[in-house]
Amino acid sequence: MTQLAQELTSHQLALRGKTIPDALDAAAQAWPDHLALHEIEGEQRSLTWSGLRSAITCLRSGLEAAGVQPGDKVGVMIANQIEFPVAWLAIVEAGAAIVPLNPKYTGREVDFVLTDAGTTWLLGTGSLLAPHVEDGRIGPVALDRVISLGTDGPGSFSYKELAATVPTPRRTDITPLTVANIQFTSGTTGLPKGCLLTHEYWMELGIFGAGRDQEAMRVLADHPFYYMQNQAYLMTALFKGAALYITPGLSRRKFMGWLHDYRIDFAWIDEDMLLFPEDPRDRDLALKRAPVSGLPGDAYAPLQERFGITARECYASTEIGTGTVVPFERDDLAGNGSMGFCLSNRESKIVNEKFEEVPAGVQGELCFRGPGMMLGYHNRPEANAELFLPGGWFRTGDIAVKDEEGQHFYVGRLRDMIRRSGENISAAEVEMHVGAMPGVSDIAAVPVPDAEREEEVKVIIVPEEADGLTADEVVAWARQGLAPFKVPRYVEFRAELPYTASGKVHKAALKSEPEPLNEHVIDTKTKA
Image 1: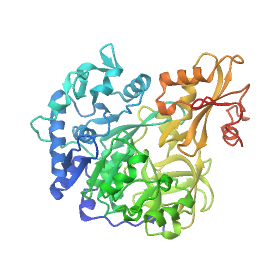
Image 2 (image 1 turned 180 degrees about the vertical axis):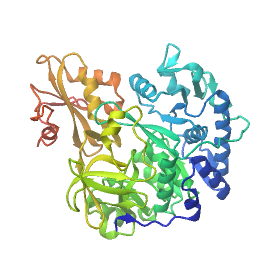
Image 3 (image 1 turned 60 degrees about the horizontal axis):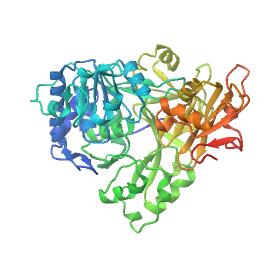
Image 4 (image 1 turned 90 degrees about the horizontal axis):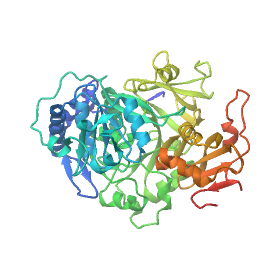
């Protein structure tokens, strides 16, 4: 087996090759009274699929009346609430593209993303946008093109007023290759890059995501909407009439309560569930099958025994969507390191340094192709030329092995990333910002394993003068231009860094040091 056979419904099959507005129309017709969105906390508002369809139509009509045109890029900065998915889908129905913004971004990061994407409009919660106003603009966007949600926000337009617009007919010239998102990901060679995600991208991801588990109908949307996970959950729900239960964000303390109180039967889990205090209701979860990524092999059996959850690995990224999954039915693959088989809309191959396909069992770089992958990186012709191979193959930057059956096994990362509390952090971006600090001669940012956050950020600095810098000064500088999750926890000063024969910092040597937290490392959290 090289690809996973999936049974899709006639509803799902009929929508392949269509657009997101087509899927919204079909969902509202097929499941008009089924719950689509529900806020778990706050106002606890809800929308059915017909209600969601109406809300999107009204806001799209308002956006068009305000002047949003096909091809425009609309930045969106909204917390986890119903308005985010409504705004996203209204924007793409207008033929424009959303540029999701992390509310934790500093002014430098907001300005970079908006400028790099060519953003022409900005929509967001007033209190989140206000700190970024400078000289009548937010980054490159003038305030007369800012739409504010809530009271006392900057901008010339009110979200509430636009959302109450009398509906007008939707456009019919949107195609599967119309760009829906410019989704920024942490770059491995510098600043973040915007992935061009089309209507086809989301349709393929949603259809085949739904096909993996047709019975899961109550989805916990506890990740930020400005990242991929909740957006992917919504698109999966769209093709089977499921409901998203939206939380304010991730919470270990509340997670189990959410699962029980709302009878959640789809949620992303990890080994931290095993750390929760035991409860007589542990085996009474509606959640029976769950996707995971990077779950330690020794956690599968305890999760199954304690909670009755069948956990299965998958491989996905912003660039390709979902690439591989382990079938829920394959108990023999649980915890054996397998990332599973390609979905039926994906092909994979493993290549060597010359980009030649290698035989089964030989490790190399994992590549994918298939319908509905990203078009490329926005404004990054060099990166696109480097990462797209002839024949439509995309280089993932991950090292893997593929066996004769078609299973994929992860080996390691080819590129330089740090994974902290679910956030992907570019080591190069941290190095660029902290390295620009006066008094820094050389720098390397590396991950340090952490039981709570997966990895922490450590910077190793060669100062221009001995004792010329302090860890507090380094962190203060980092906070001026990096989101809080990117700020280094650990700082170490050294006389020099190791280099390879080709003149690059020897990151592999730094990462493999037996004592990454040696006596010279300063923990800025504890000042030890």
